[in-house]
Image 1 (cartoon, rainbow, N blue to C red):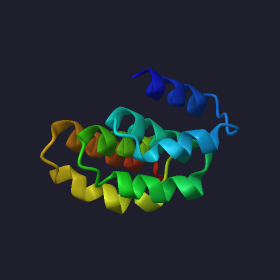
Image 2 (image 1 turned 30 degrees about the horizontal axis):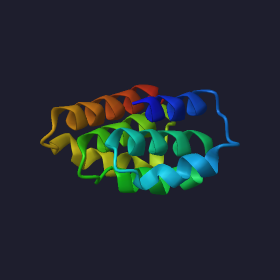
Image 3 (image 1 turned 90 degrees about the horizontal axis):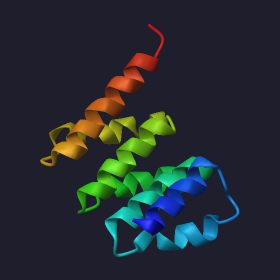
Amino acid sequence: MIVMDAIDGLRCWRVSVAREQVSRRSRHPSALVRSGVKRSVAGVSPSEGAALLRAALHDARYLVGEGAVDAIEAEAVAELLPAVRPLLEDPHPHVCGAAQWALMDYAARMPS
């Protein structure tokens, strides 16, 4: 949790100088760390982050998928929303709920 919190702190402050150190942890054994890496990279480097987030949506650990959906919503990565839609049927309630929230939030932000 400490590593994940440190990575999230770097993301919140948009610190990009540690990008390599953060990216190296994308295959960390902890789902919390992997989730933090995906959110961080998406916040600092949207083009690189989109590929990581797309892959994270299919991670076996629900924390990583949920975190990826949250990052897609937070960073408004509209091109990944079609990949979020199937997660409305995810068996884990956290992933399903994150997908519902992300899609509703995006719909609310779209002009009528």
